[in-house]
Length: 363
Picture 1: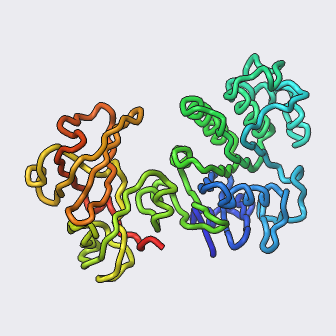
Picture 2: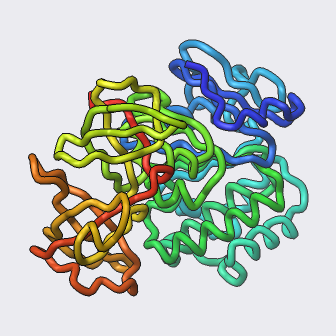
Picture 3: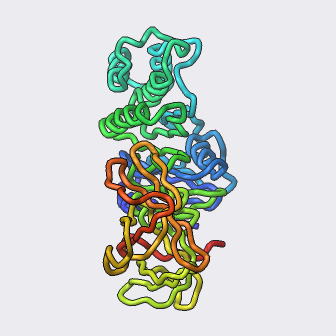
């Protein structure tokens, strides 16, 4: 199945393109561009990186680097940097020694100046004489990234590089990494199972499962309009309500939910009379205490069944519909007014049709 996460990359000069093919996958990223591979464990993300790096020869297809077939090139001749989960300085070398070793292996120019510059970029100034055992998890990740970026490689491969970091540390390191990538012009491919990281990374993405691409395109567009329920849930929490398509007018579908209400959503490929799912993200749903009539046109009655704090968010669980009530999740910022929205109380919910879409029924 052909996949081009960023069609504009095909317009780049051949020397600026990377292509990899693995088990029917066709991926491209331009020089200076990025690509995120998102999927659960076993989806094939690491296998793609192994092929790009030259650790594994694909059974069919080819890898192209700088406009040339790279199948015969060993990893050390592909001018790439690689960062794995739990990576860091080599245990028998200092931070600076590890980075110098990588620079020499890459035959990069700049020597001591290049080592010092990349350490400065990743906030490691003054840490050059320390070893892995002396570093915090954040410093180890920074050292691994500095080692991968020293000498300006053409391609950087990142396999769950932030797995050991808490969210604040991840945000700090990600910001520095993006700045260094922008300054060097290196292409970068990130493999992750974390949808928050994938969305923060931004740009083109390919959602993988079992070695196949489920959907590709700009990651924010996939988040807003997934192709199926599986993709929707891999990108974050999602409401996928079963129903039957009743009609379509001006690209807006009317769906009778199995739980009873008639709702509207952006139309998909289904035909009237066919079963379907109505997808809407929890943050896209308006909610208020009181009746649907009080909220206005398009509002639906619901009942709050649970309320929980999730750091910066409040997560509300509601029962929707009279007949076989469906479970609906709504999220709100922690500081939003939520008076009257307690378990057991009546509520009204609504969403704009453009913020929901019709998906194929669950397999």
